[in-house]
Image (cartoon, rainbow over the protein chains, first blue to last red):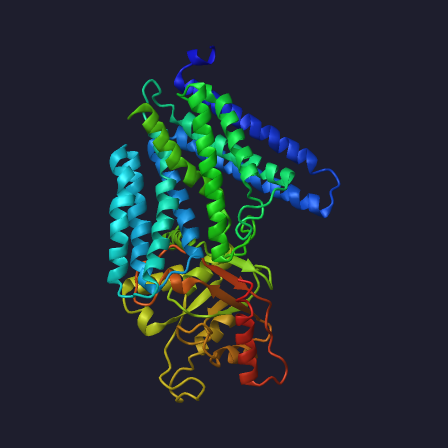
Length: 321
Length: 213
């Protein structure tokens, strides 16, 4: 194939050219649409699309900077995303005075150390640091604060926030740095593959649940989540995964499995976040400033936070490294 | 760029990273008019948060009140309040608020009046001290005196939300948690309005912003 003869840098450059080209086309289309007369509901939908598009632009530019500027900057950027997501998560949970020190450790020790471990490619330490050492340390610090009120609940919330926002998120830059056999320096493709597959699963699931109108599985948590719509989402993710197999180190069949698995993890992650939002008393924080300025970063990155570890470890397991 | 300006920008940036410092302008737009902002007081961080939530050009003309004995005690404290925040220093009055002070004591409000005559905007916390209850404490009378003396200056209520979680009493490092400052519609002193009635109305105006925060 022609593409294979290009150097790695050229291939990745081409990838970004295609990505930004598609985005530019989409933006033009949306811009053209804004001249039409629209009813109020259409207008609200249009504004939603504009908002999403802006988020995708931001995400793509961040991703491009991450790749172009090298591992240090990419770690820094993903670390910042982790930081802001965790900030949003902590805002939505009830913390007490006794949690102060644990939260400080989470933000200013656990988070930087995790990203340093990624940056220095110590993948074994990076995999166990949070599940083993932080899991042990946080309750100790919390207990030292001398407040038994709802101790398990409070500690569990902090642990969970760290696991989703720091541990999950840090697997994205880890993918960038993962050196696979005969696939050196092409981690950017893996991250893009993951993001595209997860986004496809989400969009397909959303469209399917609108079209199919199945009975929701858990009405109290999500009115749109049904098994059939979920299956459509996974199938679409698998399909896109196969179509993109040439960008990955996988053969077509494993690419299908990887795409489906990542899509399944992402959509289920989103479903879990819905439950969390219901618990925190938020209906829809997308774009609205209802919750003390929470602007929905967590909403956008949560599916990735759930899918990235699953994908990362599947890849390592597949290649036996 | 001079050092105080740079320090101010850095401080505002840190406040935004830690708390978001979102200013929600519900009752009035962020305009460069002469104003007195009055807000609930729960933490040492309140002033920085409110200040950081203002647009940059408003920050330069909006001044905090600082206790002279504490904030001039060390060169650094003096520098940061004088150069970065352009604080109005007041001597803490020894007599209880509301009663007339001794004749030879300086009127504690005089420096504030001076700043207002000069055209500056002020931020005051009319509770007097930091509160720990859910509701703000009854307001002290300084706000009433300022409203009487400067009827043309807008009085803007503000509700600072969530800040007590960022830095509980006794802690020195803030935890990153999103906070908002909600600004309400101006409150004006009515003709012949009693002191207590006005202060309660002002406190209600601050508390009314809590649900929309």
